[in-house]
Image (tube, rainbow, N blue to C red):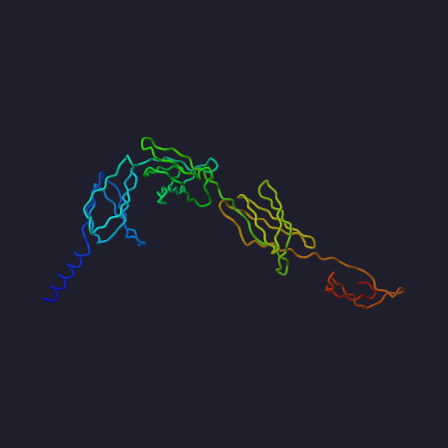
Length: 304
């Protein structure tokens, strides 16, 4: 019994020596606290609803991020061994309000992430609603804007530094995105799977028609708009071939293959000795490099 009591006493002392009750008071009722140790991947999060929060935490250095609606976030490095009872005061005087709209070709884009990045490379991120609107509460300062929306890239006009220092009135900005073009990619080969270099490809995409050429490996690539794309491929010595594909928005097609079969010709003649036809005489056809193409025999009338 004595050993068991000693064990629990040791356990309590160990817990008390490594953990502390943390008490934080705020000047606003609702908000959130995130904290983590430098170098740790795990970030813990706690909401508060009545202007204060209490929880236990092991002694050590922590990075805290305090957020509350309509206020700029506050970040602090805190050593819980030295500081475990403190207050956080959010201030409108340090908060800039940014109202914005994200557009592409005059169409509002929902679900786009907008990050405001300051000179210390700290970023504050918001997401547009289904109408492409957002409101950001950030500390006053100079910011660059970064965006994250699949299929879109930031317009160069918005790739500048925004000076956001006035806390009196909200800033209103429009962020323009460009839709990233789709593309088709593939290669042209012959019936044996060998690449066909410098084959001419006519690309019909909507109302536009353009021409491209395969490289030395028979490969080709072309930016296209969403819709029906028709490829017509031809090269001297081959039978023309092609294909039709549908390209959806914000998508591309790769690994296309267009197979060109070599053209075949008929050669007819008669074998004679100058007077009469010769029967069963072998006739061999060679290409320009003296490679054998085919051998046939003349028939009973000397024809082949």
